[in-house]
Image 1 (cartoon, rainbow, N blue to C red):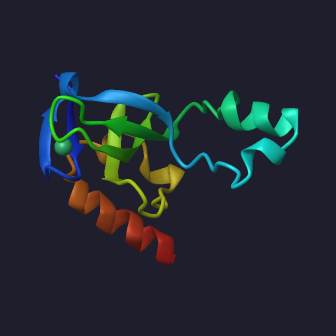
Image 2: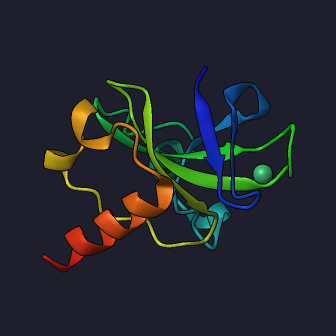
Image 3: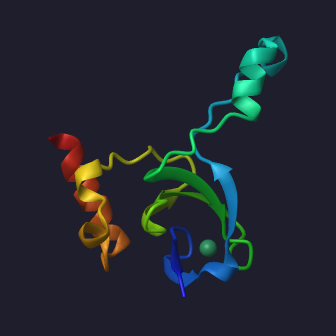
Length: 120
Ligand SMILES: [Zn+2]
């Protein structure tokens, strides 16, 4: 069973308690009515959908009910870290994201690792 760490409950919980809520860090224009149809299409429909690291919104629907963000590797389906909504997107280097590099690490350890990687 896949366990997901909720950054608000501070617990690892079964994935059945969570719901995916789309790509994270998609900036909405402050005046959405003024943007062009093409820009609205990009904002509303176009997503990056990369193979590898994605930043996603998740909701702990059968727990605290709150939205948070997560970095997940789409190849391994492993969550690299989770963080509260509104927090800065963590820096995650591609070299450290292989299955062996992230297996069995605690979220706090991953945050330390990403913070250290950001300084380099
Ligand atoms: Zn929660």
